[in-house]
Length: 29
Image (cartoon, rainbow, N blue to C red; front, side):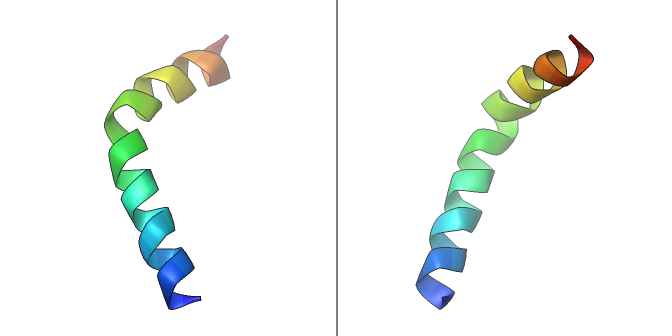
C-alpha cells in the first residue's frame, strides 16, 4: 500500500501541472 501511495503521489505531482489545465478545460467544457 505504501508503494502504491508513493507511486500515486508521484503521478499526481507530475500530472498536477499539465493535468490541471487539461482537467479544468474538460470540466468546464
